[in-house]
Image (cartoon, rainbow, N blue to C red; front, top):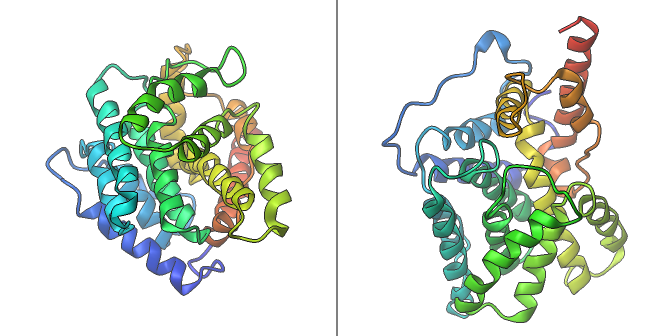
Length: 300
C-alpha cells in the first residue's frame, strides 16, 4: 500500500489539518511508546501519521472535552448551532468525570479514537458542518456508561448510553429532530443488530438527493459505525494493542484475543462508505486479514 491510494488532494489536506490539531493538544503526560519498526507490517503513509497521533491520545492524558472542543471549534458553527457545541462539551465532560472507573477498552481513550475517526469520515462524506457536529457528539456519547461486556439483549448498551446522554443534550437545547438523529446513530453501533441495517440503509439511500433527510441520517449512521471499528482494522500492531485491552475487559484467561477471534471480527466487518474508500480503509482491513491468516497458518 502506498500514499497514492486514490487519495484526493482535499483528503490529504483534511488529514494534515486534523493531525496538526491533535498535535496541538496538551502534551504534558508520558511520551508515546513507539511501535516496533521491525514489526510494522505496511509502509508508513500519511494516514499512519494521523493514526500515530490518535494513538498518542492514550498516553498524553488528553481530556475528551479538550478533543471534542477542538473539533467542534474547527467546524465554525454559527450561533444558531451553539447548542450543539454545548451538548458535545457536556457529554465529553461527563466522560471525563468518570475517571478511572471505566472498562479497559470501552473507555475515554476508545471514545477519543472514535471521535477523531468520525470527524474525518464525516468531512470526507461532505456532510454539512452541523451534521458533522452531531456525529462528533454521538461519537463522544456512544459508549457513555459502558458496563464492559457485550449486549445481553438488542441495543441494551446503546439504549443505556442514550438515556444518560439525552437529558444532558435536552438541557443544552437540543431539539427533538437532533435527539432523534443522535439516538439513531447510537443504535446503529449495536454490532449485531444496528450495523447491518446501517450498512444496507446507507447503500439504499445513495440514489436520494444528498440534501434529503434520509440520505443524511443514513450517512451519519454509517460514519459512526465505521469510526467505531476504524482503528481495530488499521494495522496489525494497532489491532494487537486494542485486542489485548478487549481481552482484559472481558476477563479472558489469555493476555490477548486469539488470532482466530481477531480474524472472526475482521471478517465480520467491512468499510463501504465513500469516505472509507477515500482513506483506503477496506484495503487496510483486507491486508490485516491476510496477515493474520498467515500467522494462523504458521501456527501463531
